[in-house]
Length: 361
Image (cartoon, rainbow, N blue to C red; front, top):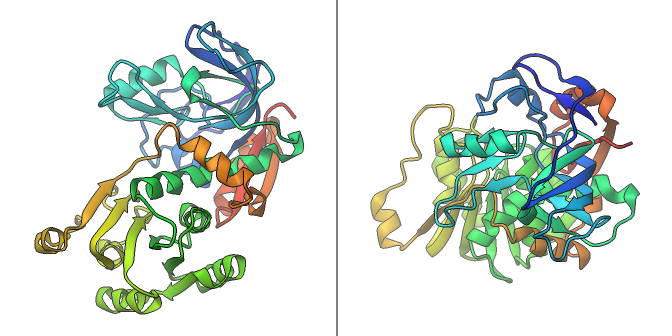
């Protein structure tokens, strides 16, 4: 099959013929129809992010595809099914604390590397090999819509955070990082889940205005000044009442006072979910006050990615028309132009934008 291969960090992807995957029990072979090129793919491929990814490898986390073949243990999947390939691979021999690898992207620890060595290759290829439990049926779709369905991969991240926050219909949620790629998707998902109001802080006034244009008065934008106390007051003033939960999706480059300002807006007995990257590049910790957490009975939950069953809930929101996947602006490339796609993704990584490879075009 044809694939884009990363042979060394800092080198371009090599477009070449590689052996097709060989399927075993507990695995499914999928023809890749469309796969996202993340906006920071260039940082992963250059080595700047120092991700655990043994090379050479075919990169690419997740895909929209059609089942080519299933193993003998699959009882519902069938050849030809349209599916989402969930890139979050978990070890099967410890359901309490599984090791995790993100297919074709990064591993977590030595156990994650062992998973990665077996499921070495990602979705920047004509075919991909996926654990059976990671192949999620999405129902029949028009093949021309496959690139838009790649937005599942973007929306699943904040959806996992909002599930962890136990967001209930009618609640007020603050999405910290609302002007980013995942944060803006988080605004859309929160509203689709029935949030009465989403507080959307940020510095990019154009993006904040666009969120209001897209979703109406249920979105309350807040321009940030950089002063922690002032910004917290502005968020409180924008809210129609107590803020029930906060979802943090801030990137590593953001300072801890900015993150803390948003987190500490949550009401007593409120919930906070941390999914961002603060501290990953060094610097001071979050430094939340112990007395505030204890006396206000604040629940703080770390969430990485999303639970295995999350895809089905998000597909239901999309099928019901509550979450519009077609609102994402999609630019597609064929596999021969994978390096151009990486460059394009880096320059066009804003809210509701996607760069997509179509390996079988």
